[in-house]
Image (cartoon, rainbow, N blue to C red; front, top):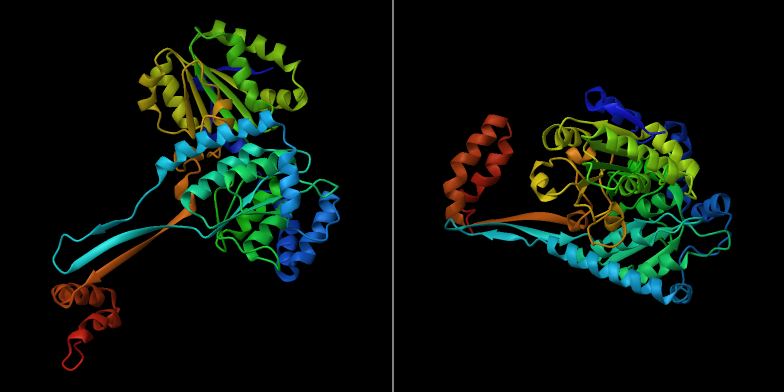
Amino acid sequence: MIQIVEASQMDVPAFLASREAETGEQYGKDVDEILKNVRENGDKAVLSYTKKFDKAELSSLLLTKEEWEAGAAAVPASLYETLEKAAANIADYHKRQKKEGFTIAEKEGIILGQCVMPLDTVGIYVPGGTASYPSTVLMNAITAALAGCRRIIMATPPDANGNIAPSLLAAAKIAGVTEIYKMGGAQAVAALAYGTETVPRADKIVGPGNIYVALAKRRVFGIVDIDMIAGPSEILVVADDKNDPAVIAADLLSQAEHDRMAASLLITDSRAFAEAVVQEIEAQLALLPREEIARESIETNGRILLVRDLKTEGLALANQIAPEHLELCVDDSFALLPLVKNAGSVFLGRYTPEALGDYFAGTNHTLPTNGTARFSSPLSLDDFTKKSSFLYYTKEALHDALPHIEAMAETEGLYAHGKSAAIRFQKGREV
């Protein structure tokens, strides 16, 4: 049963520490071995691991166009239409994030600026095998495509027959994926990071995965960029007693069914309402196909936190927790929005469940978890771009700056720096 506690008794740092993503050092040796093997043996190693872990014996990692078309065509028309509508919403939201470079030419003889350029090749990891997450494909691939990435590679483990879920193939077709490889786990991350005979080396790897995927991403960071090391999912609902307890219970369980380590939190100023939510959670748990997982999550990481008022104490506590998903289920939710300082995504009002953000509304569902919203942000076009600065000085402008360059160089003991500017004005060297 979910615990009801006074907010003053909530030790937020201890709670977050108890939910930190597994460091998985017990798996570290296995991951290191996989990375080394793939780096040295390429496709042969990845095919071997695919046989070992996914029970699929493949002759090639690359999904053929024929397989892709046939799989996508197998998706029911109604689901395909839903994927298209979700994709349109995601594209409409994310295209507004596009940034342009700038040029400054306000001082005579000096031009400064910044170029914004897309990454060339990105790898999108999508969990597969026994599960299918087309929403993950849409969120990642559409964002990369809008950023202008030339090559968008999807890696996902096949089932034992070597097939990829049709829903993933349909989503990939809609979202702009350019190629798909049948590979999963740490071996897929390794292939994308180092490149193999058939898998191109990526500039960045994004997407969720199990502990092996998370550890592998952590290990290859620096060789390639990554999005984040995501921990278990979480939801924090701020709700008054005008809400239907059954609705709030359903929202809390929407995260509890994800994972045993998922966290479902409610902040309210009414004990009677809190007790009603507890009863609704128990009633709804019994009806969930994933009851065992959801129950362990609720009992281990679930909390109903009682505060004296929602606006001050409630929002202060929410900011301290810095949740992945924050629902503000109150009358004037927009009045509370300016008080939110730390949250991955904010869901406003009584008719905006977290599932909207997961699947359809258009905001990205790749979000910072376990308190990292204090310093990080949802996946966006920025994640698929890089920036270069540029500068131009005329001879006269450099001459004006020369004393300052030489003074800084002398202060830092880097005399060749100063000379590199001064030498241009030595007699006989001027152009």
